[in-house]
Amino acid sequence: MNKEFLKDKTNELIVLCQKAIDDGHNIVVTGHDMPDCDSIISAVMLRELLARLGVETVVKFGTRPDGVTERLVSELGVFEGISFDGFEIDDALILVDHHVTFYKNDVIACVDHHTTPPEPNFALNLVQKASSCGRIIFNMALSCGVSDACIEKMAIFSVYLDTQSTLAPKFEKSDLPWLDEGIARLGIDKEKIEEMGFCLNSLDEDAEVLGMYAYKRYEFGGKVGVSTCVQIDEREDGWQSKIDGIVEFLKQKMLSDGALIWILVVNKPRVVRSDLYFIRESGVEIVKLNRLASRSRDVVPVVGAL
Image (cartoon, rainbow, N blue to C red; front, top):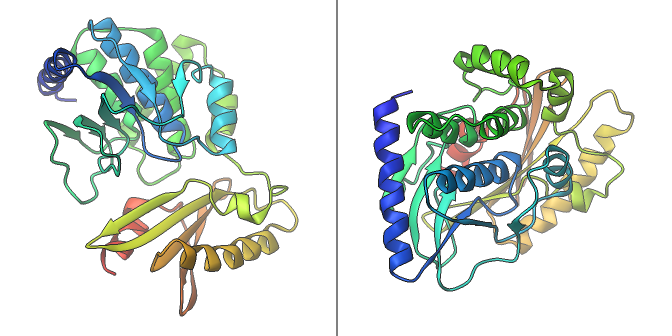
């Protein structure tokens, strides 16, 4: 962590927020549409950090999360005080966990751990590789001398829930000592948070619901690609037939959404394996990985090459 760099960026963010407030804006922290756990937790973390630094913000999202995300974030107790009803015209946005927005509101800053193109061009751009966006915000807090157990707990939760309990390729192994020490010091149930981190979907849900989990839409040069992701327990009977049903649904959904490709990521966190279904109008290609998939590594380059 470059403490001075993050401190300067945080102070710069405070100045930008105050200017926006003076110009009549409301400061809104928001994550991407169909927010995942890291997106929601990071938004709440930044709201709490800025409040401790004298800037009042609210957390809003353009859409609701999926059922698994809503259940997990509710269990963690960080779901209150969040609006999922979109934005007002006077809202100025701070983006977390993403750096591309399709909303027309002014954007004053972004904080993100996805280093994928396109590069952001806002007044403040803090984009760096990290296990989760929440991890970056926790480092921002430390750089400003804010030591808060609630913020640290949320950072730990964000890492586990965004990295399939530290098994995903994006997990920074250098975070392990901090995680282990923090879990012990803060009295976090490690077994419970590891199970939650798998974010397993229920195969009792309809294919039309499962196929839309973790929705992400990408657009490069006017060409659109979409990716969704399900987390399964491969020990459950009938999981392959359920995936086949999801693929059939997505073939039609891809066409109605105007996408050239729909990439379904099927993660099996208990065995650290993934299947990728590249769905195109011409057919379906299946790629099996002996690791968990990373959308920045396995999805974005494919869409960018369309």
